[in-house]
Image 1 (cartoon, rainbow, N blue to C red):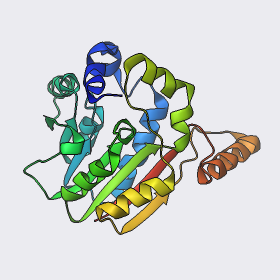
Image 2: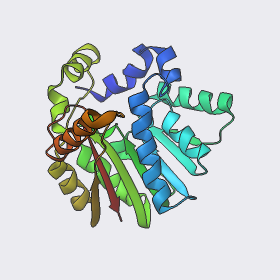
Image 3: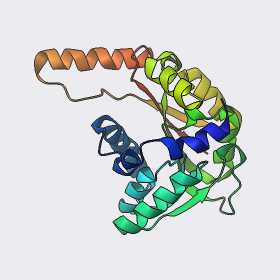
Image 4: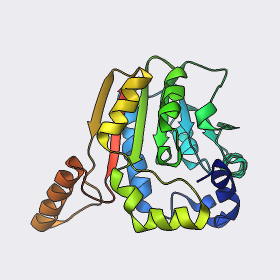
Length: 230
């Protein structure tokens, strides 16, 4: 799989869908709400580096929440869409085209870094985590939402990889912890998400089962949710 395929994906993908995100997928929007809540618990104002921002919706929602945001993506077309959306939505955010594995921004004191469902497209993800660490201030917070190890075996991932040539990895919690610690992070916490809303006693049972599956990383759509402090 090539990095050029990651750049080309933004050109060949459904452009209308890139502008609709995340409102065409309630699951993704709900997961993002959890990420925002984790940031708000730690600081309500400050600067956030949104890595792998894609068409910019994550950056723009962070900006609407009151943060100063810098979005980064490897694909020039993604950044074009992000900047266009910022203008249309009248939201202020800064965007840069950059390979996350070679990230070198002038600012090295961000209060927070966000990886939202993007690290699994990076072959050298350990270096990406190191670059993120280098751009955080002491005490800065990294919040990570990533696929589990099951993702690489999912039919959807295989189809996307075959169709577009993009990288589709999956991570165990242990892999992510090791990458974060090797980068220099010391304080690590994992979180668990019950998933979609369930109703009634049977729904409570389903939610409980899903949490247990998340704990043992055995549910296909479960996410690794981690918070690391520099």
